Length: 451
Ligand SMILES: Nc1ncnc2c1ncn2[C@@H]1O[C@H](COP(=O)(O)OP(=O)(O)OP(=O)(O)O)[C@@H](O)[C@H]1O
Ligand SMILES: [Mg+2]
Image (tube, rainbow, N blue to C red; front, side, top):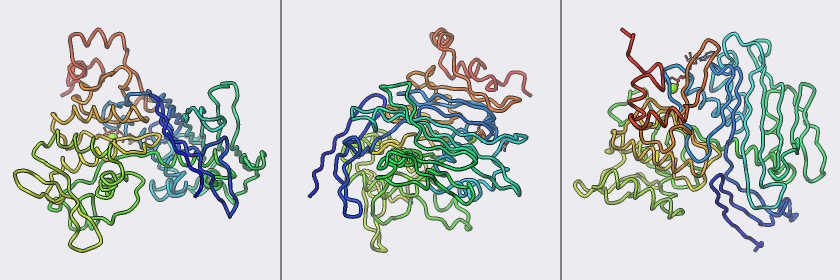
């Protein structure tokens, strides 16, 4: 049995799990660098985008402790902010070719129309902790610049990872560096940089150096970015509303029990994730159940009956009026709410979690709880929401910190914060939704002058 000690550190800005296990690699015992393997829940702090669809030049500082709530007219670029995070995450997780070609139909469709320079995506995140440097107490920066190539292709022209220890703000340790001539990655076992070669620069080097022992910091960056979760909308359609061509399974289907890394983007793993919470994460499960029952008081419990087909478990609730309701009998709002709970109450929050129009399917009375859940999640990680719901705005605890208006200008999408002073004065008389209807927050939200 290897010595093992685990601890969880909480702070308003981050949460970290420290693991000082001595691991073995190829039969050799390896001490954790700096005393710990860092299983941190990092938090995304900044995003810079240049040349991605309508986001021709956008910088976002994510608020800490409250969700970032994006509002604005249709086609303003709200979902595109979420898409950039998804693009980055899937480029690191699945591959750049998947993110560009398979998921988006090629580089020419992604790069801003008329844009000739490389597309730039840059993010920063923190993993602070009371742990020995150099792992904890740091901010990391990741930059990837992608240019078009002959024949509609693309190539990576710049990739950069920098670590900035909080204790020493002047220090910027370059962990990975790539320019057109080649790449270098910092190797902790040798204390030097390894040269990295690639036939054609079509994949992030970050994907090529995934090794916890040689490149622990870069592995951390990979894990953090790959773990970012975007929820574009849960698949909640009941069977009757589907088209015969839709043969996919959904969140309502029975599933094989197994380990899970959290709810997938469309909620297909809902049963598995809920079962895992019930079995392995008692506090989160209790909170989920309490929140669900507060909205559906006739539900006595959530059950996982064995599927008749064998080997799988299904999802059901026990309702005091009707007895057992299977997932296939639940309303869309019920499935959406369960999915939202599973996503926000995850025991291992990713560095950022984003929802596109999470208010869909919810009765106005449930929007208050939605706001609460988003704010609750924002205590632990960076939360981004795109919404058209006025009511959601009314329930935010700090709208000046949370809300940004998004508009499509002649030079692309522009994000603006609300003026806290003006907001305070206005809110003595009006709710946020009143103000919005008067065109004071979101100029496009008024009917005045429109026919
Ligand atoms: N390569 C591109 N160059 C420039 N603009 C693009 C490109 N690809 C897509 N767009 C535009 O980006 C805009 C933003 O769409 P997005 O889905 O982000 O809007 P939204 O604010 O989420 O709107 P909605 O409220 O309707 O969901 C669309 O008008 C789309 O035509
Ligand atoms: Mg949208």
